[in-house]
Image 1 (tube, helix red, strand yellow):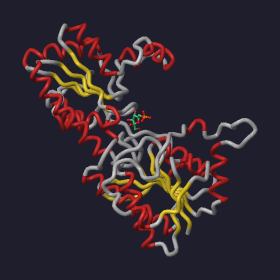
Image 2 (cartoon, rainbow, N blue to C red):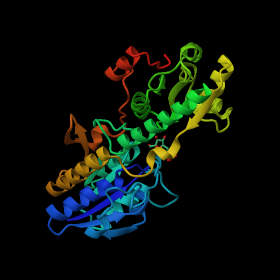
Image 3 (cartoon, rainbow, N blue to C red):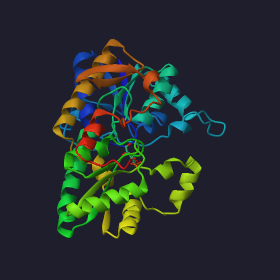
Image 4 (cartoon, rainbow, N blue to C red):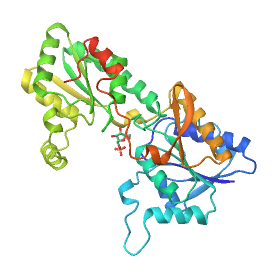
Length: 355
Ligand code: F6P
């Protein structure tokens, strides 16, 4: 059996742990298996740029951040666009899959990677997806590998910010990654004792937010606001995509936390600061839980390959490994429920969500 494997989209801690889990298991349970590791995600399949992986290649990488194969973003919407007279990217990949006589392609990736994986599967390639992303937004799985490490990093950063905020009696807006969903901000905010949590799923009211912060500041030395990068005010949420783009362009390169710090400072007269955590949330060694779940997901993926269960993506539900059909989950997003248990309990504790 010849298996291709690639890591695609934004990286995260745990990619190497999954590669290791998959390869170690596949080398043991699939007789005569060959594993082609494609470089830089789908780009490697398009260019037939790969390395035949040996057991030694995946030794000692459990703790390693990043991905030994490299990754790249290959926008889904460009997959079926013809490049001049040539084939589409999708056609090139299907052709290379056949030329290289692959029996299966394993894709470690997030939402975009899964959409392309589904396309490849519909085109006749035997695909197995493995759910990666610090955003934890892949539909049909409770957890994606990389998420918990990012929560640890962001929560640790927010706790550190709290001490300096207390020293200076300041309000801090700490921006956490998550353009479309607020899982990371919600978990990191709760795990670090943030006073306010702003997520894309709950539009915030500008005036109420300023009032809450002003009131909170009366009784607390500092106020910490955990802000998801894709958060929107109710006014911004009501705009069309184009209107919003133009509106944000007026703020230059200012991020959500920076815009909020400026506007709340102006509205309240309180000194506000913004800290954007950025890619630190995706770097470095996975936490123990991510090493565990990555190893399990990888090994489970190898078993799916062995039994020929294709067109699927691995999921974790209620602590158990399973799989969903790619066509069923591709293009869907798992969002935080504004009226879900976690948000409601946090609200009961006095944490403000901006609504
Ligand atoms: O999907 C993971 C993620 O880290 C998002 O949280 C973030 O919006 C995005 O990737 C950043 O992408 P890039 O690394 O391409 O700047």
